[in-house]
Length: 319
Image (cartoon, rainbow, N blue to C red):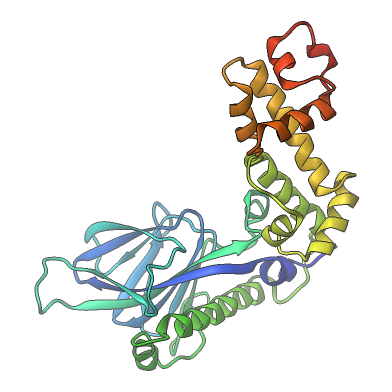
């Protein structure tokens, strides 16, 4: 048995993050699309509304306040209600260079426009997969107030002018992304403390949840060049712990299971009569057709070319 705090802090590890400094002009709003990744907003100057698109009434954030869209739901930053709407798709691929990328959303391009400045970070987690998302342990949007009352919790006190200054110059991206990680952890801890008063909520079989995530990944992309180390990293475990837990839950090694999935997928593709052996080989992760032929024959007891011809051999294929 594992506690809910283990899911929120130990089970979810930041693999990568990218931070943007976004300036939104008066009269504008911005739809945030993150591909399901977690997004953290820290308001550094001005006032902004944040809310889930199609959700409850938005929350007003001021300088020093934060909002965490933990599950990456579609949400909106709005300078004023009924504003002109633009959309921004965020990803974890840095634009290059050593500085924080700046994005400006102007209303009419006027030099005297008023802007709200938001530091926005998108996070890529380990073990945030469909299996982990089904838990949805906390609120979709968690807002914390800085030096005032309001929000779901209390934000970490920061010097917003200093953070703005740190967004400039060489090394700024590295410094700011470390700051964003700290703010994310603060938000997760505050959410857990506020919703469950630090109680340990029972969540059974943490290893089973992680192994289920690995199985989903294998079935989704059997052609990927999987190794035990890569699978372990995807679910936030060491290589040795993952291999042991996988064998306990599944009854075979990760590579043996991967081979089984590939061979069953190959048989399905060959049965469709639409793919040549070389095409099937590539689609199940074998770059060299001869290696695929050996693996298929060893597993099914018949060569892929003979199986593709039919000849009443389907009954010999392992289920």
